[in-house]
Image (cartoon, rainbow, N blue to C red):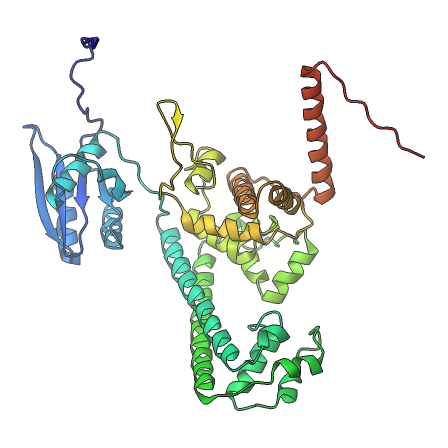
Length: 457
């Protein structure tokens, strides 16, 4: 039997605005729809502006006339960037929100309706802005992301070179570990310049190359078809061009970082790296100047953390900045990175886990890639990786260690905590100690006791 219950005094539920002087902007490629704050008569004015720079300044002037303090906008492609920057320069707080916030609003979805919903939800405090560094850090992040795109393009042209070599049965990847290394690139450039003798090509090997010259010559005997040679030459040209572009980005990023150095650390000597092996590797790659610059800018050395190199540290700092206080705890930080399990519950029952699509995927990829490099490390993080991989899977190990790296970075940037590697042996000893304590508790609950085995003579 269905029984109807009367309301217990709650009355009709309505949205109660907590901020009045806010606006909403629906971003478009050719036009922007702007909804102003609610006036004394209860009406909200909606205006349409073009996407040109003069129109953006006209929009800002109108918002200033309405005494708008904050503006909410959707992150539509990159069309929001000029609007965000113009509002920020005018002293109006821009709030960048995910387009999913308007996915389930009632009524027909139009540009005019969307800007009004954005204004209403923002006035009620129901919109959460995306994290975005401001000022010069925003410019650094834009440069770093574009550099990353060119770096990925560089890898694609390496694959094109590998494809052309395989089609000619020139097994450079069997002769050397990395075809972009000293020996590999010397062989490829010689082939493009016209060298076909496998013994002369093998003589280009680096003295520290493990493969003997005779074995390398066997791998470098190919069919040398003209079409594949032409493809190899074009791929090498593109690889060199992209490499030069990446080098220019590195120079520009270094100049931008130099301007952020505080005066109190201008002449202070950079402390030596605690890991000699890692310091030697960075010296070989030419990353020591970048490490010193990042230390002077941030005041901490992220490269002391196992798995975090100089380029990874630069990406981390340009993505989140040097002041990480916007994340109250490390749990908020790893949640933003999507490096924590997503627990979806409705009515007390777990729901099917789905990726929510919100978070810092680029930065999370940096931590995941750093975690993969620790699979054979003799550090405590390397031992944790292998422990998780043996008990669960490699994907679980990458996820867990990436989260550990994120928490270490947060503690270093927020509290200045130094990273000290206890080593693989100490980690294993601590793990066995925790395991023994767990077994003792389980035995005590059953009224039993653990008795150590006596060594047999």
